[in-house]
Image (cartoon, rainbow, N blue to C red; front, side):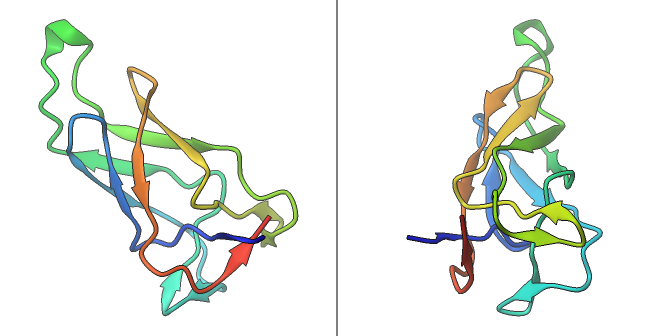
Length: 105
């Protein structure tokens, strides 16, 4: 069964509940009017309150495990099940897909 694609409007939060925004260069493919994210796209995180003595605040989430059959401009698309690791601690981000209209595997 196809998994929903990750779009720019999807909710991404670091483990410390700070909001993130996916930044993509993809302007060709959209789902529900929002650009679909691809593998190299980072997610900028703002407002993380993790103290410096505990590893510092999360600043970006980098995704892993993209689609194996869906490519956009030669790059693999990100899925709702793709894992985002918040840097610098490599903790998993919490992802909720905004509009599950298109899917992939």
